[in-house]
Length: 225
Length: 403
Image (cartoon, rainbow over all chains, first blue to last red; front, side, top):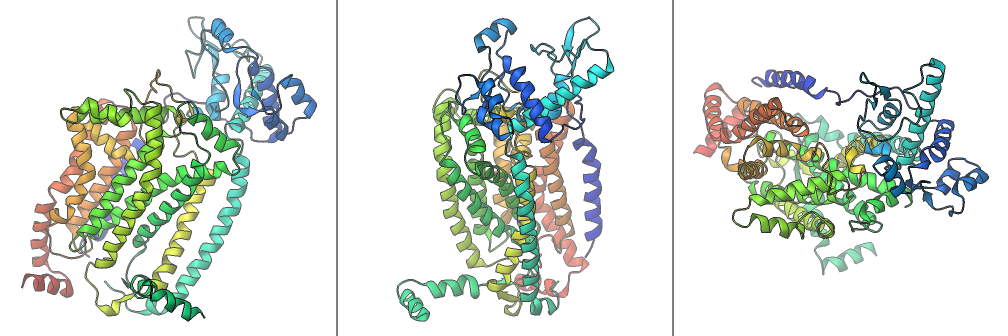
């Protein structure tokens, strides 16, 4: 047909020309180093969150019993929950009013933090390790400059590379746990996903062969232009 | 025994004649390409959305104080609740992908043309219902983007002449988006899909009256029609398999691809998110809205951009059959239109800057120009093609029509 190819090519060129427009990155640069997904890291992160972050932050969608399924011993979880029942949500030790009095803002709930920020775990890791002293000698955070949270990991004051690396590991574990907390069924989901895709793939091949067989006579007829 | 049962039914209900008329004897052009699979896929997605939606509704709480928590309850505590929700949320996006491809096929192959105007218009009605349903469904998780999206869109009805403010209050059930809005959106989000089912039946009745168009655009002689069953039932099933492969990759591995991060923060009427964006399937229309500096003008342009498809049977005045197949100018116009939509989609997703506004206005002009110049272009193209040669069969058809 007249021009069929060339008009297609013309449009392709136009679309390709637009690609750079779509490729722009988000506003702030996040540290994209990988966040671990293994059970041990998630457990270390959970312990850190419960014992340290839990002073101010709660996780209202995560229950103490969920920590048991993460693999913690019953005694340990019992120690954390105190008089609270097993199916209670992780509650902050400090009340929201007290925290507001100290920091000027109620510390946010952490259950969905990894899902509620663009960048997810990379955001959390970059935020936790983003504390530094700026030119004016003030403590600030490169990801979230107006944060009221103190530099919990103390990274703004640590210069020893070994100690820094240790703290960065800790930030990764915390991020790993919060990713788990935001979507606790993620692993089960992916696991099931492989089976579902394998099933559908085989089914589709069989359907294709079946279609070929049914259409056998039709496919031999001359093409209609 | 079986035959006696069937004949017992046939005396009371037209079962055999229905199966013959609409399945085993329904004539379908044998040259349909895989682009013709998307109507069936839209029907499949509709059923999947209904099925998952009904089970979600059993666990969801339409209350501004409980809605957000109940979603997390579904995601964490309900057995396979995460699967139901991800199927439903991804299904909403899939519905639009499938329907947009279905529409693009109709435009490319000129399937909207006589005698299929009513088929096209019932489809247009279904699109409007789908848009309303997805907009209302998006409020239900009661996240920040849900809340502010609904606030922005309902606010557009302020553009209604004389009674704008009252209409906005009437839609929301309150002065602002609140509990009353959430409960009514939930009620309608549950009702409208069943109206869609009714609309689909009408769409199919119209289809089975005029029959499918086909890539050649020529009404094929009886020898080139084959029965729908088994040829197209199996072809649709194979297409469904391919579709499910793509769909499940998103459901199981990238379920949050279509969920804004800000929607995992509970709705807060006191705090506007820095950048309010609608769902991707509304972005081109949203970009058109923002391209017009005046509120009323913007709303009118946006409404027109959706409704103008209905005018296609009258705007396309060419007598050359077969949509873009034999028509190079129309084909070029089609591709330019598609590009304009993608550009508008990009513009709609970006914060407003001078360059973005400029790009949006340009693309808006191109979008409408594709429709408004069509009557002229289609006539010019027809004259050109009649002079420069068409396949003899097509030429005979056009001339025969003239006589």
